Length: 455
Ligand code: GUN
Ligand code: ZN
Image (cartoon, rainbow, N blue to C red):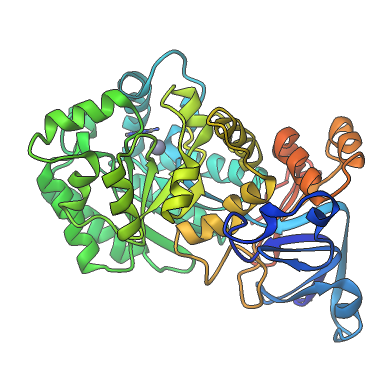
């Protein structure tokens, strides 16, 4: 029973709607029903043919049904929209238990809440228990791939990858490198962070669907020597990722100026160490200067835009339109535990409000693009994920268009796809994720009672 045709409404993106034609379309033309309309394709009665974990074909159900081999199983998805799995480009699994910690901005929040909780992750069994709960939460929310912070302890990464591998998830993670300005029980050294990261790369990078990210926490907690050690790891392993934070909070930026007085801006601390590039992801970038934007673009570096976190910590409003005009790839991040929801639908809702506050109107096409193909591009995984082109890995979601009475009634009043997607992103959350499929296998079913996650 390996070949399955999934039948229902299907949407996927082929390009960025802000650079394609979709945003300029008005009225009923926005619907784009059954046709490739610039940046996306929508099939009102579509078919997604999956075999051996990968997409074989996508198109009109009637067309696919007419040429199916006899042994194909047909699975109907009523009142639902099938979309590629959501991609979270910045999240901390060890911060699961401090979501919703009251009252502080970034630097005080790290001292008061984050460092004490991260101290526990030297214990493999604790880390494994949290990783299991964390991954369950991702699947419940329709997130199928994420770029994930561990803690300074190599055990935290071993535990995370062990659990991710058992669910066959495509995940990228790494050990935090942190050799100053943090409690002793959470610091390593430039040398130990280099050798421990190297060993983890050798053990986990490219093992099945797993990838490694070299993960200096942020410039204030790494000496220039440690940042250089991170650069050395990238040179020695050119296909690993670089994952860190940058320019999230104004006090943080002032602190970086004090710590690196010889440098002209924050990004320079990373650039000096050779940390920029197409597999480098910088969370936040709320307050970049013009020079920094230009350098991000030149080096094809990427940004994780984390709306719920930026609002929760009072960090500021990310200038998405600036990133667009500079051609810098952006993905959505939840940044749990500063973020307040695992749901990329809720994250889209907050992204819309952040754009509103800056006088821009984020379209739902752009939001769904950011959560799928945009995320895949940010993580340099477009050859494997992000849409349903043949050959892609079949990680996808069945979104329930009638998840609650309110959502059902509101969507019934939508006149086109644009409105339906916008209502989903405004009212939707984990309740809308009916099923999450990984490599063609159903791994989460909302209505299956106790055993909703399968492995
Ligand atoms: N900057 C440095 N560490 C962190 C962290 O754990 N969360 C967030 N949001 N920003 C950071
Ligand atoms: Zn973060």
